[in-house]
Image (tube, rainbow, N blue to C red; front, top):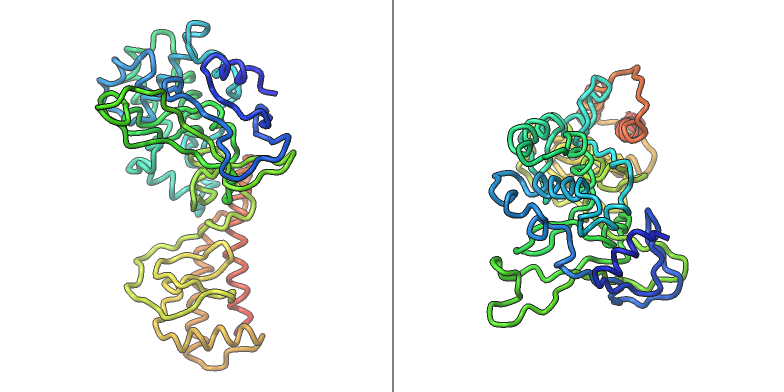
Length: 381
């Protein structure tokens, strides 16, 4: 039982369903809970946001991204210790920050990987509500903009707060913007969630009320079940609908087994063409003009580079019948694709010494997709 978090909930009038079991790293149910049941209501004035922070006035004057500012607000509250309104919540946070990949330094072992491409482009990337920053960027921001406010907060303290914030951030409304939401940030991720996060986002940007004319009734952010929950079942939230393992690693510090949104991309421009092709129930192609191999080791039609649908249908039929492709032009198309895959495989160093489990998994998954796709097409020759 997460006693620190429960204490914080009592102190701040958080409504919790009695059937919830809050652990340090997950949320379970100890009884049946019906679909569409609000299982937690957290007052907005209790959230850790820039607006609610003790540093609101100082932080609001800085021209930095919201994740940078909120991370400093968290670091400041941690530094305040027992004087902080969020002390019990802070005590419930993990002692070690999540190992978010956006703070990793690129290494030669990452060559070829989708993660390496993401890290290389990080300097010009501000995605989603997190506004990603590299470790070097954060260090520069900290020393040039935040240091005058630090007062005993080290850069390592700030990095911890940044990793916590990046991995637990929620959009609240157009008054609070984003924030940390105790209880809501305990739910682990899955692609098919069993709870959802609800908040009235359209409020007055000046006062936070739902309208100027009404009194400021206490607003809450709610966690609501999306299906009936059984006893002893873990409850999951979805952090995003189409997050690949690279995106999960960058923002949250974990990956999933067999992530259906993983891609191995190829350099080049997408083909401006639309195919009348049904890509369901077959293993070779996915109908997309972009250049990649998907999580099922299917080749995008853009990567294959052939616009004649009759050729594509002929190759699919040959594969499904476990037969060879005899026509020379078609064999040349297939060999050209195999050459592209071989060239992509060569981007990965052959002998590497990687100890990071997430890195090992992502590398193995990508190489596995390339080799599986190559084998399928090679069997046609």
